[in-house]
Amino acid sequence: MRFYVSNQDNPADRNRELWKKPLPVSRQGGPLLDDGLTKKVLTYGEYFSAVEAFIHTCPEYISNVKGPSPDNVSVYLEKHGAFYHPSRITVSRGSRMDEYVLNVAFSKTGREYLENEYETLKMLEKKYGYSFLPKVYACREIAVDLSRTVSMFMGEWFSAYHEFHVSDIKKDNSRHIRVWDSANNRVFMTTDQGRSIYEQAAMILTACYDIQTFEQISAWHHAAGDFVVNLDEQGTPYVKLVTVRRYAPLLNVVENNAEAVLNGLLLFLLNMSIHMRLDRLDGVKDLCWIDDFIVAGSLEGFFSGLAFQQKNERIPMGFSEYFKSFLTEITAAEMRALFVSIGENLPSGSPDLPVIQPHLQRHADAFFRQIRTLI
Image 1 (cartoon, rainbow, N blue to C red):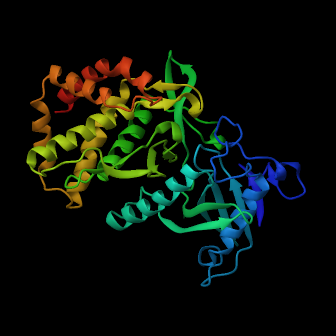
Image 2: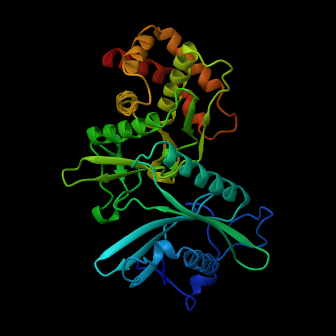
Image 3: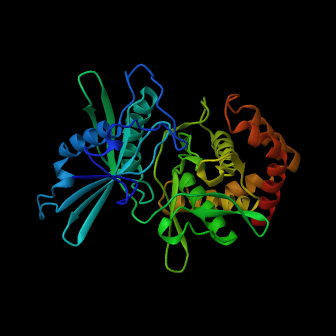
């Protein structure tokens, strides 16, 4: 088994100085603060050794009993987050190569998120079976030493899919979306490509919205790289979602009647349209508000998601048109008031809040105009 940091230009093994160095806790770097579970910072060597131990517990994925034994198993530590330190696992058998993601958490909060996410993704796979959500295979707790353990789960790796973020580099006096594909020099997206990316992200979220229970994917963020994109030879983007931290209703609804269904879906749409506009410049810099072109993509993706649900007989045929009629009854002033109310109920300590508040009324107006254009 071979270990690397990001790519094969950065090998890691017991004979290298890196093996004994502490892992950073975020993309910006910095040591892990003791949260009561770890008595000292986890080193690269301890991380890779724990990953190796996990892999040996999953022979059904690594050693395919129906085919040849693997020629090579490689572990690539991809990035560092506040909660997870994911690796990409490649298993080579002749000309065939299988890839998996292995999410690793060792902080108290990270472990709680990881175990919840594994169960949530298993549930969503059973409920929907969508190809744009990752399959998950195994979840384990691995001992680092006599006093410390780490939590891990193995899942589907979306090969040739990459993160995308608003670039800090301006082109044509505006900021564009840049895909983190190093092989293609982190290519910039056109406005049409960018709109399509966010349209598909909105479609995925809407396709997973349950109009009966009001359950929805929440706590997602573009800054965390939750959505990834693949570009075909013609430059057409295809989007998938790599993580689901929370799947629950935003509100507790006492009575599930027609009015509650419409209002619940409206809240989902408006809340999604706000958070769709948030990112970090280049994924690691300041939080930013994405330009107005995203509004059309978000709305089109929302209705595509409803159409997708209708096609799969999860909501009644004609419901999408019924909801459009419901939207047309909302005045511009009412729309502004709804967005202001959502803004007032956002968590006061959220780092997104100072970015959202100055843009909220203008967003409400742009959203209202776009509804009239689409409908």
